[in-house]
Image 1 (tube, rainbow, N blue to C red):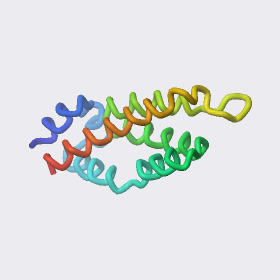
Image 2: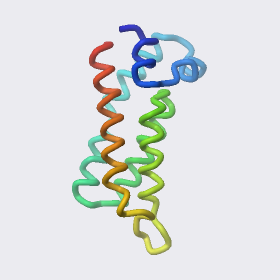
Image 3: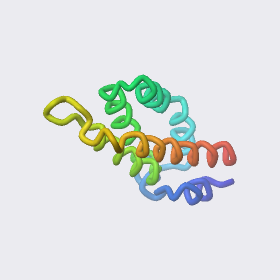
Image 4: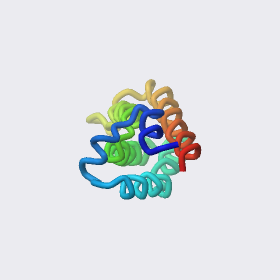
Length: 121
């Protein structure tokens, strides 16, 4: 599968990524590096341990990584989770009843990127 087909299969924004990484070789290098980052495992562990502060940090980091790589659907899911986890004045997640379904959506989108990556590279 080509880089174009990979990005198309995940509804990604290859043009934007090319605009700042400049070459397809660099895009490919950074896509591969994305999977070396421990942030998804950190997010999963934080949710499993009911550590909403750590989950917020991990979701926020994942959101930034996803947008930087043009993984639009993953970014959108991580953004929604980040906002639900954002602490309110009492230090609690803003929308605790929404955290689990939003986390599940992040995991679904992360799996879609992973599956497309494994089929492509």
